[in-house]
Length: 329
Image (cartoon, rainbow, N blue to C red):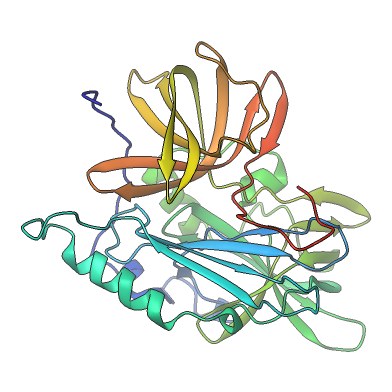
């Protein structure tokens, strides 16, 4: 109500090459088999029946490049035929006053984009598998999340695949580097100390996305030299203590909201999703870890959670309004 909430925005530079979406830098002309930077995507895929078909996927859009997402889109495969056939779109930052034009550009872009999206924009809902030997590997800078590790695979049949393996420091088990200077230093070092190397046998499973003119497997699980690992794509993570819990109505549905006290002394407002689907028994005073994405709703910065961990128990946040028959979360 009368509290103030603060969330550190991603540093962006409207004049930098990163604002272009994707492209190459001038550091190494021999690694132009994939982009040196691109705008990251906060895709979340659900396979409720674990049958290799993604029943539900959602992603977010940041139209004014301020580090906060302006709109949300979701796609469902309601009949399990391998194609997405249902679609929902919602722009967060909808002005309630004709005089409030502060975010008119991003709001207009969000609304226009909502008119153009269709279920076929996500294409196939089938999980893809790519297997082969690593030909090349590189770190790639992404605006909404540090770095990603991209590899080029060559199958036994000679077919080439591009695979996004997520954050390189998580795959290697190293601690995440802090600060922009550390990230730039890693990029300038070239591709040293990567957790995968040419000649490694690798199998990746996940959806296929498009970055520029390239098709990329967004790995959710990866097997490297017979060792399987899960790729963490839960978004940004914050830790804090629940100061306040409150139920509010969002688009006609009751949502559980929480204000977290962070170790930095600041607070974060978190949307935990539909209250009737959140079965974590959360209460004020609990220490929690929240993974999610930052969105802007009017003048509020809100973390839209996709997972919450308390007492070592991790719960995925289910934001699906209705699932196809026979499926459960």
